[in-house]
Image (cartoon, rainbow, N blue to C red; front, top):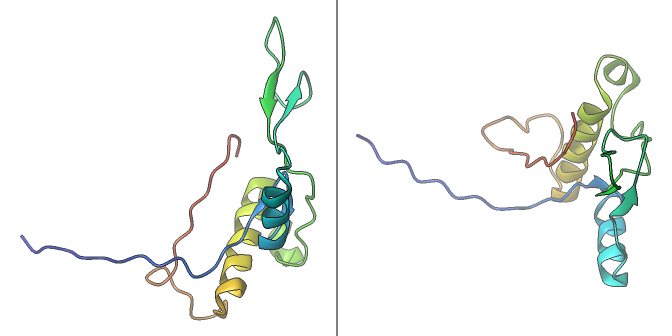
Length: 114
């Protein structure tokens, strides 16, 4: 059996989360020690009898800079966030969207819904 060797290098970062959009918003929130999770008791599908849970909700939902309207109309909000974050990471890495094929780019996505 042939052995496979792969190396991964993180060259770009794209984030959409409670601290805002992009590397700068995330870095500023981390540097300020700003909490990103808050107690919720309704409206996000997390309510349980007996008390609230913590949630880290996305505040800024406008991703029109990163997701073309024709695409945005056809995909869910979590998918819009994924596309926007991937495009941010490509831009952060200095890679053009065109030519960034699946053999060159990977995405790590973390979400509770979607």
